[in-house]
Image 1 (cartoon, rainbow, N blue to C red):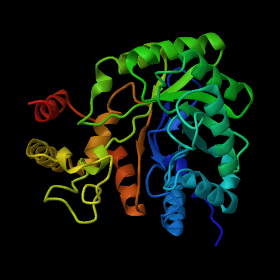
Image 2 (image 1 turned 90 degrees about the horizontal axis):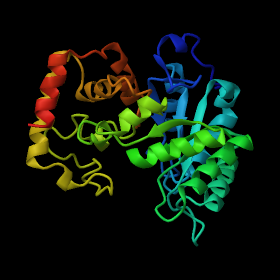
Image 3 (image 1 turned 120 degrees about the vertical axis):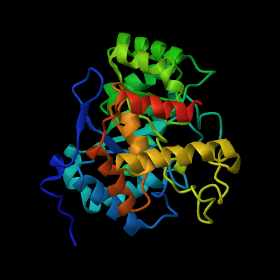
Length: 330
């Protein structure tokens, strides 16, 4: 059965301006990091993407290595675009990144011009697109001049293969340098994608200030700390959880006794707010004025809908924020 988007989808989402640019992004964006690769359920992928768009999520975020296997998330998106969502291409923001290992040899990862532009060509082919809306340098390269990496992003925009340039996982100092280089080239840095959640707050020290001062958007990933902030681990480690599956991103030592105490206290406060812990954790990030959008993952339509319902309660009092800080930083 053909897909037709909900007519009232744009009334269901909040949209925020990305830095000083003209681009609006949904407050909640969908990342295809997990659950959209070649080992996933393709029917479920379609259901999640269709429901996301029906809820006003216009931004789908990918990277060249998303899978598994690497690249398969982009290939799956191509199939969904060609069968259904492609009719709405001009209403979508599709982003991809390059920086991590994708193929053998000296040109298969990091930040060289050779790797970034070759990877973008591969990503466009996998997705069946003429351009992506945002192309990111996925991580800084300590052995490649920053100018070379930023020049590659500039070239991608100049060639029309990307509309905007972004960076991810850059520290505050390198971010400022990257912004300067791109600005001088005439391709402003649109957005930064850092890891940020209640348990991982490094961006608050300097990075958010740099982004605000320079007019660059911020779209945090891993806002739920790989599931620690979802309530999933309140009563132990479920057999089908990421920790039980020995995920390289979430391991048993991340759920120590101190962390569990914090999780239970956070969950109790979320209940007092009339939210799930996941909803409160997302709202807490969106409460930061520098944050344009927050990237969520979804393994089901129900989970997606629950996360989007965060938008019904985004406000925190100063006392609440102080109380949460006391939980997180006793």
